[in-house]
Amino acid sequence: MSSIIGCSGADEGSVKEPSWILFVSGPTGSGKSSVAKFLASRLGAHYLEGDDLHPKANIDKMHRGEPLTDTDRQGWFEAINEQASAYNRQQSQHHHLIITCSALKRAHRDILRESCDLAGYSLMHFFFLDAPESVLRQRTEARQNHFAKSNLVHSQFDVLERPRIDEYDATIISVVPPLDEVQSETLKAATALLDKEQLSK
View (cartoon, rainbow, N blue to C red):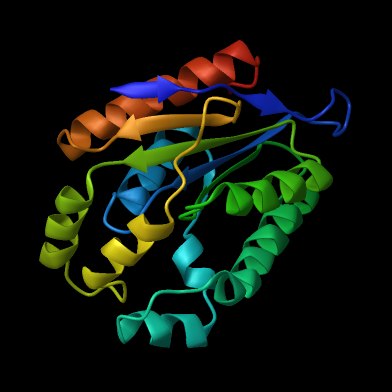
């Protein structure tokens, strides 16, 4: 089940070609990459893996099972913002981008909102993947070859701020169901959003 909190976009005319950017967010183990890749393939968008933009110091820290601080994340958000801005500037058409980023706190989402507005995106939206901590710990324990281990799940839930009703550009998606159902539910919500804003391809 999804809970649509709302959506917002930049002022009309801010870019010549309508553009949009979707963030697939949520704690580790929520399936951000799998959902984002699926959305990108179905919506004809460019996919960017946010984890690839972490500085080495962050990756090393998570390998050791140490949670990131907001100071650690600052450079990461700057890299994500730079990539998102560059993509919108460089593309002559179809400025459609989907990025994975945990965006655990409202302050994190506000950073991304401001950057996307300055970059000239017509619309940006968060799809926040949500599940109980116990579910994500179990999934993370079964995951292979990823630097974020299961002990990081608890630290993320300690600081987690799920999108609230006044965050009009966020949709909460339950990831308790099987992955294919989650992907279908997220695609349905994304398609409805883009159709409403007349930004579907």
